Each structure stands twice: as structure tokens, then as C-alpha cells.
Length: 169
Image 1 (cartoon, helix red, strand yellow):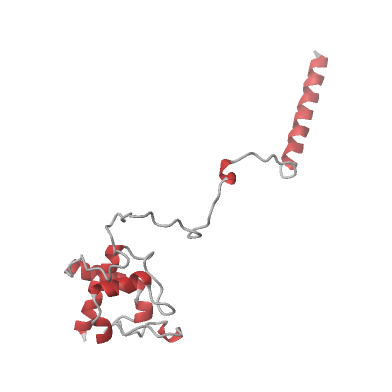
Image 2 (tube, one colour; image 1 turned 30 degrees about the horizontal axis):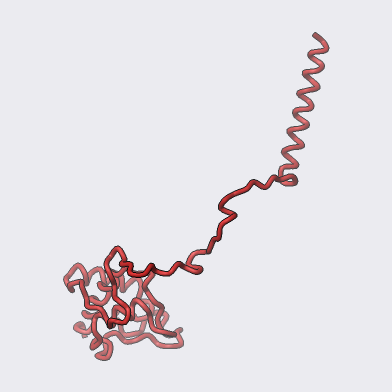
């Protein structure tokens, strides 16, 4: 009986010492487990995005078809569209173009190329499709493309709102 108690104490002591050694050596001795995620190609966000499949159409419908000119505006300029466009303009455009669209936003003075005055006839005389493509693709060295910020419907709403800036003057 006494021998059994002594063996039990020895085994418990060895178990505690072994557990302590394992805990302290956890970062020293590591086993590399195979992970299938590590064996495949991976990319960071927007790094080498896949090309759009040929003949595919977005869920929202085709925004425009390349090499066929500017698209026509499918969104009627009703109160809802103009209100949405005004809200989106306030979020995405006011900092450069200003509240009235005259190119006098808060950061306009800090930019090398001044933002366009959206109330001028040269801008207002453009077709809706041309304004849509400008929002979609941006203007080199002047305006970033908003294709990732705004959906197709959002861009058409902004175009409808831009038309009201001319009549406000």
C-alpha cells in the first residue's frame, strides 16, 4: 500500500514537471501541420483581379458596351433619383466640387488640377452617357474613377442630380 502511494506521488510529480516543460517549450518546439490554404496561389485585395468573363452582363444590367459610344440614361430624373443623387454627391463629390458643384470644395485648393465647375455650359452640354462614363472611368490626373464606390444605378442618380445644378443658377 505504501509502495502504491509512493508510486502515485512520483507519477503525479513527473506529470506536473512534464506538463510544465511542455508549456514552456511550446514556442520552441513547433510542429508544422500541412494546410491546403498554404499550397494555393493567393492575392491581396485588388491585386491582379480576374478579368471580366467574355459576354458577361452585371446583375444590374449592362452599364455600357465598349466601342458603342456613350450609353443612354435608363433612370428617369424623378424626385427619388435626384434625392439619391444629391446624397451620393454629398458623400463622394462635395469635397472637391463643392456643395454647389462650382469646383470650390474643401480640398480643391490643395489639388494640382482644379476640379471642374459642374454648373458651366461646357459640362452641362455633355450627354448623360458622357457624364456617366466620366464618373465611371474618372479623368486622368484630375478625378478618380468611381466605379468601385458607386453602383451603376448610383452613378445614373448622380448624373440626374448634376442636371439640377445647371438649373439652380
